[in-house]
Length: 227
Image (cartoon, rainbow, N blue to C red):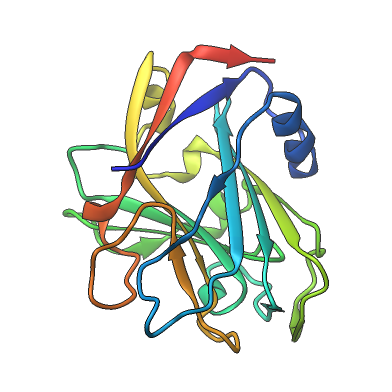
C-alpha cells in the first residue's frame, strides 16, 4: 500500500494562487500519478503529479500536468469534468469505513465534489459548499475547446475541511496523527487519447476509480508543522 505523510503548514493562504509559492517555500514534495493500470487498452500516459499539505482548517492541493491535448469544456461546478483534462482526489476520512469523497477538477479548476459508499446516499456537494473552495489555474478559468497543448498546466486549491460534509474533518485533523485512505487520479475520458492513471495501483479488469479497497494512505502529522 502506498503511503505519504503530509505536512502541516501554519498559515492558510488567502487566495489559491498563493498555494504554489507556499508549498515551494516549505519544500512540499511532488508525487507521481503514474500507475497505468490498463496499458493494453489505454497505453497513453501523460505526466501528472500532485502535492498536498494541510493547515488548521483546509487542505492545500497543487497539480501539474504535461499532456498532448487539453480540454476544458465545463465551467460550472458538479458537471462532467472527468471528460476534460482532469485531476482527482478521492478521500476516505474514516479508515474503517468505505464512505469516501470524490473531488474532481478539470484544468481550469472547475470542481465536482461527491460522496458515496457505505450507508450514505450518493450525492453532490451544495453550491454553497463548493463556493468555499478557492481555486487557481495557470490556464485561466474560462472554458475552451479541445486543442493541442502548449507546455504543461497547473491548478491549485484551498479546500476547507467543512466541504467534507458527512464528517467532522476539523476534529479528525486535530489528532496528533490522523491516518486517512486516499487515491489521486489523472483522466480525460473524451480526449483523443483517453487515459486513466492513479497514484496507488488499482488491480481491476477495467478503469474504475471508485474502489476504496485500492486506496493508499495519507498521514497527517500535527507534530510536523512549518510556517
